[in-house]
Length: 441
Length: 146
Image 1 (cartoon, chains in turn orange, blue):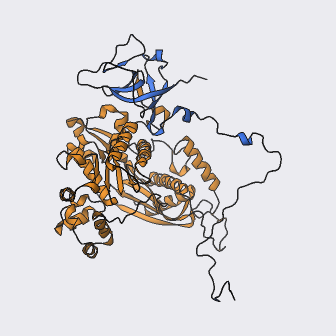
Image 2 (cartoon, rainbow over the protein chains, first blue to last red):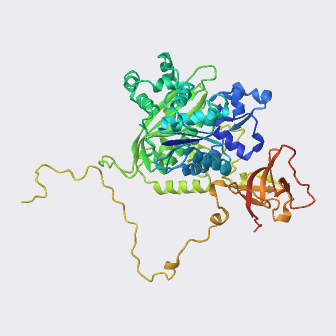
Image 3 (cartoon, each protein chain N blue to C red):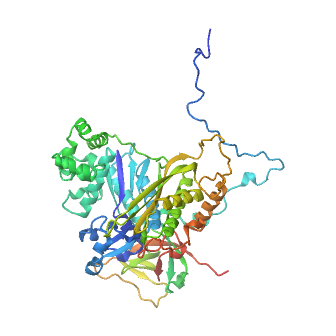
């Protein structure tokens, strides 16, 4: 048995904890750079704002409907997520943190009424952190995710599902006929693992609802689509195929990508930006004790702006696998200089570290060239800077991100030309003493 | 006859590399510390001030109406959202969408918020309104200029 605990409109809920005046008002949270809506309060959903709606298209609702738009405050959301997850863990013996606002709980061995237990955990998360959640319970992860969708929708849109399923929905104890009705009322695209394209294909094939998909023969699905979709169908039929992943392995790749505050067309600021991204990625790489063998740099123009589009990327192989910020920043800068074309307004760039390997296993090499390479500043420099990197990480951990950084990333601070646009960000209420909320007496 | 290895075929030593950690232990000479057996952790303020870490938040005070309760302008409050608010608690409440810190007064089924300074008027919920308590103040941190 599995439960899925999911924070309702999580980013908006985090903001409302510290600004109660936002309750009852339409609120959205904008992506990095204030590009598009990535979280919406129920009131904002009622205004017809879609997930991912570009800000410039809905901006008029500020005046017309009292919409409040905030810049994403991921520092705050990360801390609130942490609090929520550690309380959700009380629901059962095992936990998989699936995303910033969702976690699966394994319920094996949990006795008693699961719904009343879930309601208690839900109430505790709400009281302790201020975050409202919904909980779905079912024999498989796919069904638990579906149960969560039903719990949420039943709460937000009365009449869509039976009201008893709101907030906490246990599909395992639903009588067969009621279960069929609920699955019949749910579009196939809501199923975990069914993306928009597959949903379209299924609908074209006459499979409209989750019930239709559940009644499909697994072998037919495998032949017509894939083993992955077959697993999904088996899970919907109640056969558990996807295990709880309670200790996710180290990441296979590490990315740091950003949109710019304003379009960039000069080379030098772009080099600064990707050097900075490489540094951030290197920090994550060292945290998971890995080395990268290749680095991918990319950039592109805005698909929303008229004019010529340009999208470039390049893979920079590294002479030796490394976790050295300076070496990776240099490689990113080399990649950028190599692929740069003048005359375009680039809106986004990023660095992705690939071909990761554990730092504990090292491939030694034949001594074909001198270790002290002639050009010590290039990515091929074999000088061991691991103590410098450890010191850098320690300083940045204690005094804040970016306190010390590679000089290639330019002047630190928000004044950087390519810096993020976050005009509407709320303070870091729970992680900076200067930013704690003010209470009047 | 028993044989330990009855095959002449080559035997793999190990299928996977065996990683041996370096020992960090040291052998010390000299006298052992007499305090060694009595070593415990030093007092930790976080542990003393925070009972429910997931439910604890810091808030900064603005205003003087709670001075008589030892809560002054600029102090930092430790607020625990896990504690069930009761009569007499100092609480952070939400009034008109803003945070306010007051005594929670619950008598005869009536709830009101009282300032420590009696010259400030009580906050009484209007008909149909409820007092929303955001959290209970468990400590007040007062820092001196040093």
